[in-house]
Image (tube, rainbow, N blue to C red; front, side, top):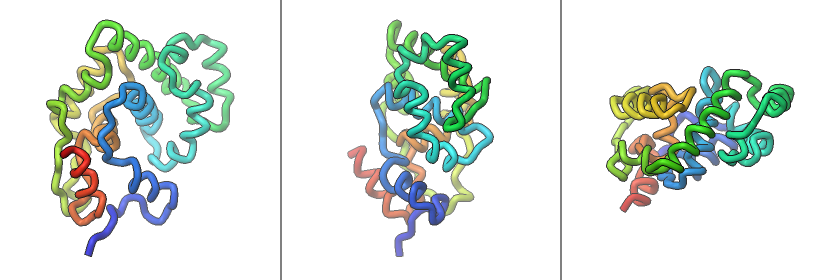
Length: 191
């Protein structure tokens, strides 16, 4: 009998995220930027909190357009910190601005965010075969190396645990349990 990974519980939004997005390989630099920023906002919170605020955060952060965010000033920061629809953390808002600037630097001077990140994976997702959530790591040597490289490039709120969650979400690793129907479906996307 196949069963969905247990972490979404019964929440319809969480189930839709699990069934449609989580683990699907993402190669678009802009989409990866948005996800990295959102994962940074998740620090200390449950992912469902971010999912519930994601659309409001997209609107507040100009669709996560790095060129726009990189130019945010004190007035933009004040506007964001006054917005009850987003995670109102001064440090996380500042990190989003800094991350947009780091993103633009990578895009301008080379290889671009997608190539930069996927190079750690040799361009291909890792297909893990975990049978229980207890086996799934919180971080790995690859997430540690990726985190260090991101920080060196100017990114913030990208520690190795956040980066591993990001890797799972963006399909760099397939951590759907083998009993989950999405495991094979996601694995097939890399064929």
